[in-house]
Each structure stands twice: as structure tokens, then as C-alpha cells.
Length: 244
Image 1 (tube, rainbow, N blue to C red):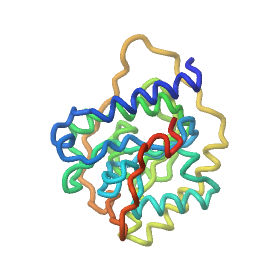
Image 2: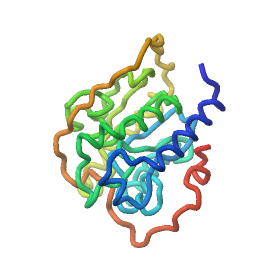
Image 3: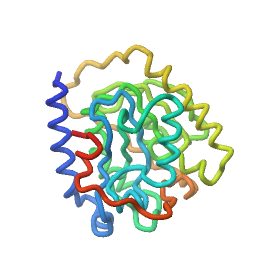
Image 4: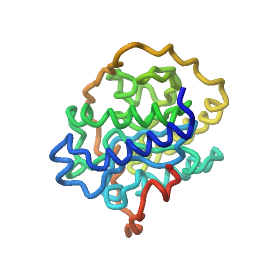
């Protein structure tokens, strides 16, 4: 078992490798930033969204637009801050025009996310929206049917408590959904208080995770609602967010 320092060093190496990723030529040629993810590198709680939006692409940080502000508000209501959790997306680059991620892009990018999960070692992962939920559940069931329902899933070599949630951006277009999000968020402290999930025995050879092609979802579920004015881009994303 790796120590926290060893995991942190490996996560730093993954961060730097991801910055030069060109597995998806279109995304690599149109992005401004690779939005790796940010937060506490030893967090018990991880959030996984869909893909960076315009604000995220400019600043190099996940969830910095209006949906990110709602995420911060919901966290504060359950006694947490952004600095205590880890936040990432399925895709690390913004799809042009904020289109849906293509299946091949999800396939190309998922390794970065699985490395993050393996190295951060969260006890609870909250998936935000359809793409993250379908990928990490390995199932095509939509978010409307599974939100707020805890389950234990093995993701790569780790078993975690998976807790699907609506994407905060959905509530920006459908205000009544804020109440649903708030009700689901209220259950997170109880999930974190549960005993850690028993981990599987290490397997010989590579572990394959099925990639499920997501069904189209409304563009309202994408975190791309612009702020009145963008904040200055951090000089070094990872350091500023306490990632390393």
C-alpha cells in the first residue's frame, strides 16, 4: 500500500503528463487549458462532473462558473468547503461549442480520471449528471432514475460508495431542482460517517472498465453558464488549490 506522500507524488506526475495530452486531436487543438481537477489530494469526498465549460477552460480550474458557485453553496450547507474535497470531470478538455463528449473522447480520457480515483482514494464519489454517472456505474441508466441512491461500486482497483447527483448546472435552468439537489446533498455527511468500504484483493493483470455510451442529455446539464466577468487565471492551478 502506498503512503500518502507517495500517492501525492504520483498524482503530481499524472497532473504534469495530462497537461500535454493529445489523445483527442480536436480537443487538444481547441482547448485553452487542460482542466485536470483540483482540491484536497487526500479527500474522502470526490465530485466528478462532465467536462469543462468556457470559464473552466479559461481559468484551468473545474466548476468556477455559476454552477460552481452553487456547488460551493451546497457544500457550505453541509459543513464542507471546496478545499476539503476533490473535484474533477470525465473530460479534461472543453468540447468545442460545449457539445456532448463523444464516446471516443470519454474512452481516451477516462484513464486520467481512474488514476485520480486510485491516487486520491476517496471514500465517497458523487457523480454529477449523466455522463459521469453512466461511466462510473458502468450502466446506461439515466441520472433521473438513480440520483440520491447510494451504492458500492468497484472502479479500477478501488471500491467506493457512489452517490449520483443532478449536475448543479441543471438547477440554474430549472430552479425547482435546487430543492432536489439540496435534499440529496443533505445525505452526504451520513455517507462519509459510514465505515470505509472493504477493498477487493489486488488482481493480477490489468483491470478493464466497461465504457457505456451515454444517451444525449439536455445542454442545460453542462457547466457552462458564464459569469459577468472571468476571474484571473491562477499562475499554477495545482498549487493554488492545495492539490500538491
